[in-house]
Length: 622
Image 1: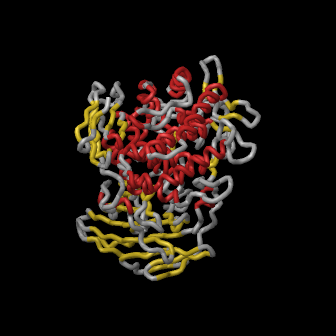
Image 2 (image 1 turned 90 degrees about the vertical axis):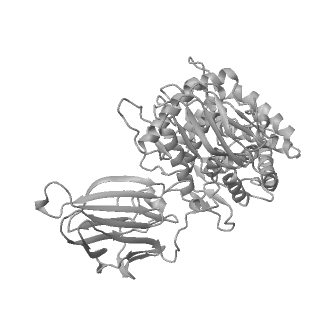
Image 3 (image 1 turned 120 degrees about the vertical axis):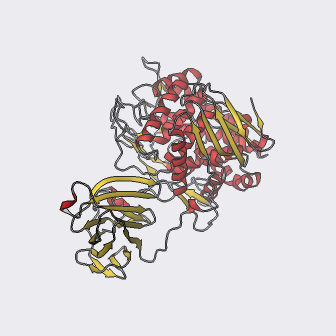
């Protein structure tokens, strides 16, 4: 860690250490490898030659293991034929900057250090941080931010120094995902493609690493959005990730829903029933959007689908009032209008928002009917009116057959730019009887959209671009202006496969699987949408979270899509709609969870699916 750019240890939205540089025998080790070993550990290896007569071979290996809990272990391994006495210096520094300042490039200079306990300490008006060392250093120089040791290395021997970084008063971090009470099943995969087991294993590992407990209700867990930028609760991302991770069990969905239900706005007012959420950038052609709207619409949809996957009736009943308040907010906000408009006056009518609202209405109506509540008929009626109007108002005709508008401007004009937000039109949701809910587009419009998503304009070869390559404002690194966001690619694959467009789905699946391999199967939140060429590799985005909750959960969705698992636990049935073209050959998924019990399925090279393990009494539907 040199103190440049994003480097550092972070805790509670603050960089507690920005620089940690090592010199051994007065020299910086020659770096030979750096890699993410697990979701919460990075390993760095360097080498040294301690004797000029040793020839070209290094005789000291310097290994650094850096852990997300704020620990760094520095180990020197000697291959020298004689004992060595090696001076080791570690130079430390920090600016104690918050994430916002670092992200905008306005972090201040390093702070002066003071000697503290067995290490160093830094202070500023907004906080303090310290580094303690074991064994204690033989010398500590505050003015230079330097700790020194003299380490004796016998032939073939090793010595270690451990640094612990934390804000003053903060206790040690406990890894929620490694506890016996983790809500995620330890599923595994096998198959013809060796990337398949690696992707599922790493995706689950990342989800485990991002689990957080609710401080007031420790039994409830949710996913942090990602490291290092979004280590807290982002309601929309948490709901999306929990939904995609339903094949690993309903525990994460239940905990996330309970946590967010406690944040729901109640009482009188236009926002009553909303799940609060921050605004986020929506790309070059639209103003920022409210993630609270998305979260409010995702809440009843996730509850409805979690029930189909096996959420207990008791847990469903406990969460049902909050879902009803979300649906009441939807109907109240729409009022006599057809569309759900932006909450801010003069905002556009977004295509993506209508897709979320339509899904929430249909899945919410199904949930209300199944639980003996009223209101389902009115929601279905509005959804039907929305479908009729949307197919006319949001479809932009052109020489290529047309495309969905990304939004309608306040004056009613369509905003015709083609972007990945259109994939939400394919993500219709799961109803009772293991059937997909109807979509906002008709059959012909869906076919045109599928062709567009599978074209080189949108399919970069590494996944789906956030904005078409020929659109004004396209930027391969733009968060919503051309970069590949894994979440949207996974939703596109699932939606295209469900609609029968396996060629397009398979191309996107192979692309993101190739990108995953290039990233060590640990998919970042996004990466550059540059066109894939022979021998190329995906370009990392400098500000992407990795691991990221939605990307890790996308790995689960991508692989389970191949089996087409459609459960209806209340009816005691599950239906399989596998991808018939079997784009990755034979694949087996073991240790998933349906109806609260282990569930295993295998898809052959011919695209035929067979259940190998399931809950007692669970019937295979047709």
